[in-house]
Length: 95
Image 1 (cartoon, rainbow, N blue to C red):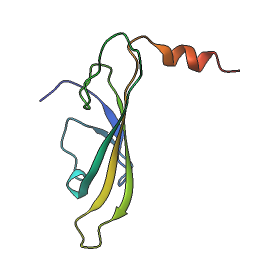
Image 2 (tube, one colour):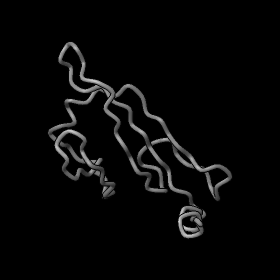
Image 3 (cartoon, helix red, strand yellow):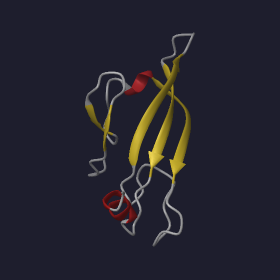
């Protein structure tokens, strides 16, 4: 098991969840697609997965509840952080 503590908010129960640990709501999810949002022209390449070294933020968007009671259909939006720290400068330089 990884020591990574990537935390997300469970959209079903509202609890904090470590993405690398089992969670009772996870078996209700059926992933439609992973969508990665990556910084361009960064200092080094990113891995297109949730274990990327930039510690990406993971958002789950529930699309609908499956009509056949197979759980929730959802998208994983994986937002990668830059290695060059541009988020800090963009956030602090807004007018």
